[in-house]
Amino acid sequence: MVRNREKEESESRLIPPVSISVADSTSISLIKVISTLIIFVLGIVIGLVSSFHLRKYFSFEGDQFSFKSIYFETEQFSSRDNEMMLVNGERDDCLSMDRFLRQGNLIHQMTDKELFWRASLVPQKKEFPFRRAPRVAFMFLTRGPLPMLPLWERFFSGQDVEKYSIYVHALPGFELQVSNSSVFYRRQIPSQHVQWGSVSLVDAEKRLLANALLDFSNERFVLISESCIPIYNFSTIYSYLMGSDHSFVESYDDPSRYGRGRYSRWMKPDIRLAEWRKGSQWFEIRRNLAVRVVADSKYYLLFKKYCKPSCYPDEHYIPTYLRKFYGALNANRTITYVDWSQMGPHPATFVAANITVGFIHSLRNNVTQCSYNSRNTSLCHLFARKFDPSSLEPLLNLTSQVLGF
Ligand SMILES: *[C@@H]1O[C@H](CO)[C@@H](O)[C@H](O)[C@H]1NC(C)=O
Ligand SMILES: *[C@@H]1O[C@H](CO)[C@@H](O)[C@H](O)[C@H]1NC(C)=O
Ligand SMILES: *[C@@H]1O[C@H](CO)[C@@H](O)[C@H](O)[C@H]1NC(C)=O
Ligand SMILES: *[C@@H]1O[C@H](CO)[C@@H](O)[C@H](O)[C@H]1NC(C)=O
Ligand SMILES: *[C@@H]1O[C@H](CO)[C@@H](O)[C@H](O)[C@H]1NC(C)=O
Ligand SMILES: *[C@@H]1O[C@H](CO)[C@@H](O)[C@H](O)[C@H]1NC(C)=O
Ligand SMILES: *[C@@H]1O[C@H](CO)[C@@H](O)[C@H](O)[C@H]1NC(C)=O
Image 1 (cartoon, rainbow, N blue to C red):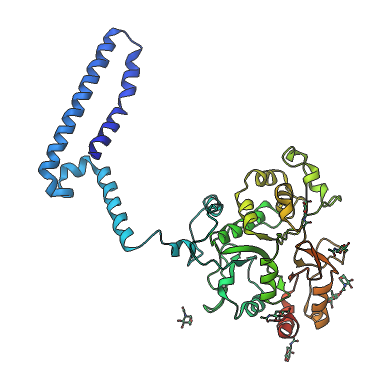
Image 2 (image 1 turned 135 degrees about the horizontal axis):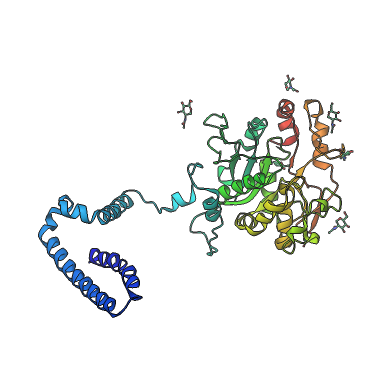
């Protein structure tokens, strides 16, 4: 029956051009139309009857019958596909929860457009049908190797693997060389070329967020650079982030030419100068905001179009977007320490000679106070940058003594 209906549809699709071309001439054409219709209806009837008979006669021969395989080629393929899907479906449960929840492999063929769409899906049901241990997603944005990798390995060593996940966005073609026992093993996501200072840096951030969002257990998302280190142990960082009512995206109004000076009036009226914000690229956001960032196209496109050098989208897009719509959910400060004291375009880079016990203490205590869940605290930074590769060895020497891991 399905077969006949399809045939009917495909034939009736052929009719309109005929009747249209004839319609504008005289009554002779009307007769033509009517006769065409009659022939058409007759055709259908004959078709119905003959295919019914043919099927009756040759049904036992199935697919081998050459007449059928010529005339119903497309149909045969589709019905065969359906059969295969059913067979596969029985053998291999494509819709299993396990597969949905745990991507064993981070490699996929999705385009950014497809990935961002998938990542923006949000369950409406509050309860999870599985035990969900909220995770911190550590998202490493790097050009090449991670010089601080051994320190991070030590940081994660012995921690509950249910409480964190790792994602690495490196330049295309670069492969992180780690042993199969490393927590970084096979944690690279499909990446694309990044030009520092351009909107492609925001693309990479969104790509990291989107890949991490596919894991429904990820709750907090930290962006980390290759020169960044943790300055507390895992349990301290985990409970600090999980316990926070706010996300940590630095967002402030800088009246100078490095802040407001980068605003473009073409962004009006969607983004007004009063809404323009600046902040460090190294953010920490909660799942609900990560979804919003990945889902946004409108404001992202404004930045892509009008925030060009010397405007840096990675320092303005997320701080401005969150300020405009989700300000109350943001702590407006960063949890990644950086030393801007030596005036200049770049923050200080710490080398081997800088690494002492006193120095680590000063990283932790340099800021006297900040707000955490509307209370004052002296624990303001969980991470610090920028560390030169030479600082790795002395840092490793100090971990158990001062860093607590
Ligand atoms: C890890 O690598 C080692 C040596 O390269 C190999 O013997 C071992 O089977 C690997 N383990 C897994 C789980 O792949
Ligand atoms: C982590 O560090 C805190 C102090 O910073 C300490 O109280 C806690 O015991 C440490 N946790 C572990 C598992 O070492
Ligand atoms: C962050 O800034 C927004 C907008 O200015 C404000 O509404 C919010 O209360 C601030 N967050 C905190 C924790 O003060
Ligand atoms: C780090 O060491 C360099 C070279 O020894 C020195 O110039 C710089 O002031 C030090 N920075 C800090 C923060 O101690
Ligand atoms: C904080 O950092 C600044 C600049 O690096 C430095 O001058 C100051 O002494 C530091 N404060 C503490 C308490 O370490
Ligand atoms: C937090 O510290 C600021 C000064 O840094 C002070 O004005 C404020 O009252 C303090 N808030 C609380 C709740 O203690
Ligand atoms: C690290 O510690 C070991 C022994 O504890 C010492 O021999 C080595 O020189 C230290 N390395 C650095 C860079 O401080």
